[in-house]
Image (tube, rainbow, N blue to C red; front, side):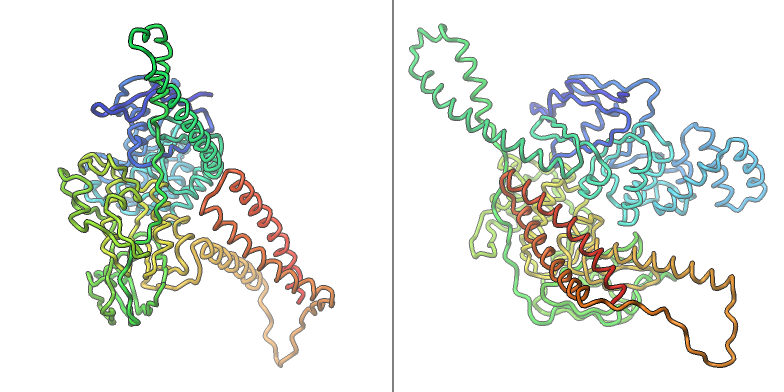
Length: 628
């Protein structure tokens, strides 16, 4: 069943077309990701589909009786309304009775609660109430009597998300839903969308989210749209094929144009009308041959200042606000080359720790000692204030005219801007014309060209497109100084960090050795162990153990010893698993460097085969280790 159709959609700003002749449809059960670089018009396209702005050309039609829910990037509601009123502002009678129930609970009004519970029974609203509790709790919305106008940008986004999810629309359109969510909430949202029957159109740059949730990709690229039936991994493969074909087509057109240009020049003016069709064809050919793909190959390795032996020492630092203690007796000594991720629920003190390290906040207790050679580069969640009437390149030149690379070479800021995906024409745009993601990218560049040796990034992936993320990741992989990252982008953390500061609550911070995926696996194992222990404890409570009068030997179940053959097999398995892991690391490195389509397909298949084989060997090793 087709829910939405868009035919020949076009939109321009001034004399420039943002996109043209876009045809798109979404059917029941589709989970479509809209992707593209910053400035290609993704949010504009969503606003056209939802009727917020008109298209210059084309038509959008939505099937009758289909309910559409839209999560905007910057949701706007009546700021004088309480959060509860915003969330339940629809006319749905079930939603209205649940709103009354939530209000009675919030205000502890027993009389109102008795009345509303009868209405809850009549409307069978308890399932909806359970969903309400789950969604509000998972999104961290606890004070529903707060006024919407008092909320931060991230809190507003979560309230808007709760509203749109509870409305349970047939078609759910989400613009950057994972921004301002902590990692646990992002994973919950993934699971929620995967298990629901809702049809989805989503703009997101979270690559794990794209792979897990979406089954179709719609890419906006240079004013055109391309559809791919598959998840993000499939899209990458097919996009590479498309770009190879386009590049070959452009080369062919350029060769043909040289011949046609020679023919055009040799024709006498008087005979021009005899081959008018060929002249017209030449103009079309010239337009095709002049196409070019903006592709930067320059390696980003901006030179950094030298770090001394002493970097930063945190000696039992503590910090709280009011009665709430965010950080308690935390200590750590930073070493050269540290690459640290910082994770934890919103409001636990992650940004507070960063601000103390950089000296913007003083600890309540403890001491922070910073080495003399440390030069911070601190990227904050809050936007830098730009002069909207200044050009991009002029803002960068105010910091530096040329930049020295790690190789000792110097490059102009124009070259560096190109490496950060600002084309030569875009460099002379006014700041007012940049998208939110482009301003973020410029903000990062301004920090990096100051050559810091201790880089702190607080949610750097918000509003950045996938191409920008790839550029940033490559830069950070080559960054020789210390690196601290707060991010909800799991792929970003997995690629870049070696250990993680985990904010566990009540002021406790633990240091986990590994990346984010390894942390989640460890936490899952811990949770499973707790449940197993709890189940065992319940059994022991049901049958109290008798108190022994004297010490008696404890009976144990004798385990079978491994045979000589099994011992040798176990040793060989350990060697094989280690070798496979090394091969996988090398193949992943090959993929990251890129190659031909045949090579990429070959490496991907080898990784898949190695993963399957490694899993089988690990299972066999576990079986043997239990008897060892």
